[in-house]
Image 1 (spheres, rainbow, N blue to C red):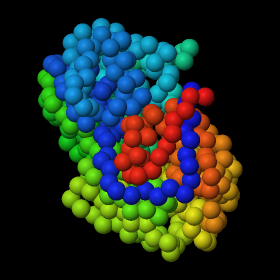
Image 2 (image 1 turned 90 degrees about the horizontal axis):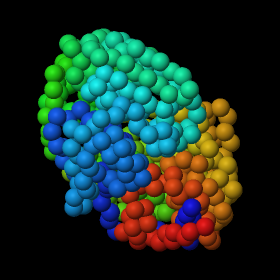
Image 3 (image 1 turned 180 degrees about the vertical axis):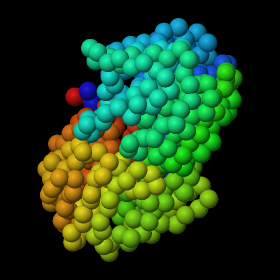
Image 4 (image 1 turned 120 degrees about the vertical axis):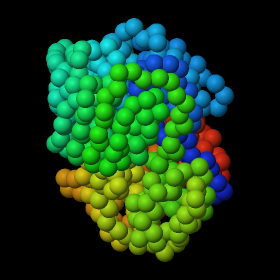
Length: 418
């Protein structure tokens, strides 16, 4: 187990490059099972979640080879199992994407209920509703979901709630189903568009990704392809808030600024200067900032994954700010840790009331999930004294070489073994 030692009063500066999107990569890797030939995926983030998915692919029988910097080549022809190892699957939630890809290729998938960050109830009922509509038989017992469907047929599916996971999983299953599938009330995230682009490169016929209606005309077989994963908008947003909270000045490169429109708008409302380039952003922290209200929503709303980072910044601004969490019930678990460092935050249901304080004090704190860990890291950078952050394994699930990235931005993090 590791801890990060963070000396306070550090200010971000210079420039950094953003890695490939975690939330696209964790869908595209299971989707590779559908390929009829070798696939080459570049800009693959080297994080524990993607490394685990590659190990699952190997366990299922695929050939996996890493080449150069962040390039992965996969030959899925040897996949001969429809049941990923329980010990691997239980470690991450996105392993449920193997349901869609395995049932599409083999007509069967047996997946233990997945693990991942504990963010409150996160049912997979919409995933199963979609599979059932396509003609699959669903059975749940002893903590395992079995999906059987030898001859899936296209269907008209209306999602009761906007769900990224369900949208992608149904899209995977429908890619080779007979006839047309229409997903209404689909999620619109850029990672869904990237997954659809990958599948289309293999030969799928998917239209409408990025809108709330996705149409999929099933094809009999898919081929191989080369694909480059989009930049990680959440990593970019993390560094935007880190620069703002430390009152630093940072250029963030290799991004798609359009994906960050709600973040840019909110930072400007606070008073942070954000200059937008073609593939970069320049964030300049300011001393005089205003409290704001933030409401999280599915894309293109303000992302729930950046809510903990926003809370750190708002805690440094005089006055009262509000955050309404509309996506996950359990996304305020970082609040008690921030209060340990001196934050004044009161949680009432899904709303957090934040009173700005003069400063944080370094303290021993623990990351309870991926984005909470990133928020506590940034809190440590602005605190007085040293912060000892445990639960680093959560951070490594979604941030590639976090120490090196922050070093590029001019700040030091020291990792020590407990």
